[in-house]
Length: 405
Image (cartoon, rainbow, N blue to C red; front, side, top):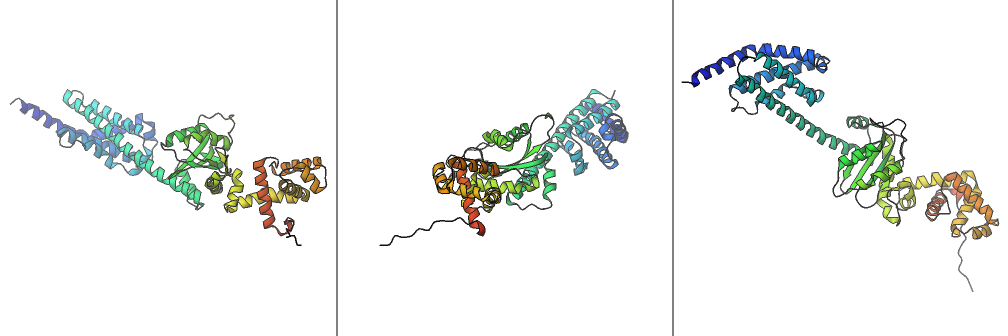
């Protein structure tokens, strides 16, 4: 008999809650407008959607209070009233503020109605808070998976050079902060790859990064970025230095940096060079790590890379040819004679100091020094390619005749 009045009290309480639910919703909306600036600044349609969520939460509480055990997950149902775009425009922090305001208004109306009802609203608000966290966690997970797929698509488009008019919008959707020059870095994927650590390392160096993992190959698209907290007077690091500092994030093997290009839309040029260099890096026995793709021009040209051939001819052969025929002749003779000043001077009928002067002029014109073994290989490859490609620049090769008796 003692439970009968308690049951009557709960029945009366439920009836009273259903009666005032509309007033609670209106009071909650009014409190949101007065206390939450972000709510007042929302467009009318989104404010209406937030109001629907608050009203659904109050109605859901009444059902939950009626029988908490029969619908343990009813708190999650209140977010079904929220349109998908609302979840993107209202943060988890703002959602928790919404829950707090709704609970405060409800508690104020429940004063004097018993501890059981007050405890119920506190328990229910806890469930709603956990439900909100679950909704946003799932949304964040889905967003993360989508961003990863989109980033992989963008990096693949850059590597293949199949960029279309949608590429800039896809890059913007990824939150790319890069501006100005871009370079592509290619290496191997480490056994335990920490993509977040690699992103943090890149941001500390003042660059934004797009990351693509293609099996055992790891590709980074690096772009200079204006990141928050970075001093304006801090000098920008050159890409070779950035690649050197990011080197620990790659697996063992070769690490090749493509040349810098003006913008992200031109990144496919840097990608072509870095991929071609990565494919032939083992041919240079003492290749440094990282190595620039342009330092692998001879190996790339021998492997049939048309970009390397074009680069060698345009950067070395044509500038020398247009500057002075004597420089081309001297360089040919110097390389053919095993980089001997005396042998070159004898062949050209000049003083060795003249050979030294001309070789210095070669270095001034094209930036490569013929006296070094590695750069000598680069220059000789360029001369060979240039002479093959130009009718007017064919080198005289002495004929080899069999001796006759």
